Length: 337
Image (cartoon, rainbow, N blue to C red; front, side, top):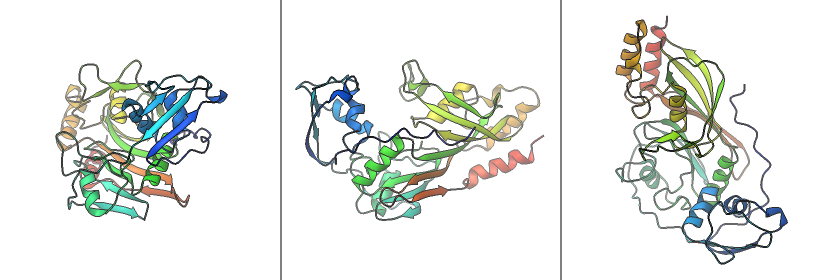
């Protein structure tokens, strides 16, 4: 099985620019029965997530009423969308280390270190990638909101690796749309506990908030469709190094899917706490030593590929493991049976 995500579906009709202001539509016969958010995403140059946010904020009206984002449309329906001015950015610039692999007038590709939160949030108001970007770049795309300027996709705090950042709103919209249409290739490496039953394998399990802990995600009935492709690259005493390809990009997706299989990411204290200590036989001591060597979970965004929004050129970036992960691998290889 190829590790590449499936071919994208045919592209949507030409969409309208998404500058601030009022946009009106009338639904034709082709839109009969279509979801409101999906229909609008094909016609306004905004991501589906942003469309859903506008609906929840009361900025979208359907026949003079306030709809749900999944509202089914009928021929002749009238839709009005109010697109607000971008919010003023409130995160402050900070002179923080920032490894930039590529920069041009439209975007940057950066290597995020483990331990750095991507954008400010409760509990992490400063010291984030956004704070570092605001110091490095004078003007970032505001379409992601006042605390997420330029951010097209995210990595968990303790996940290292590649991220693309938009400098202007058009680039942000094009990259977000490419991500949604699976035209952005994101490949990871993960060290997981135990040994998969088969390789390659695909996990297709819906994800949503954990029913008893809102800070965590879980496989839940009625969750969002989530697909992860896995392939064993190296096998060790009680763990495996995996190539991981995302078909969708949900919060904590790789970590939750691997835990769902019974093979959580090594070092993941949220979804795999104490897994190694439960092993028996000769593998127990090996697993305990591996846990001792882990300072964070073993997950690294190693490759990122996409078409440049302006030139159409294929942009393909790869980054090696940081030292703390490479040293763990070297030990695992030395102690392999």
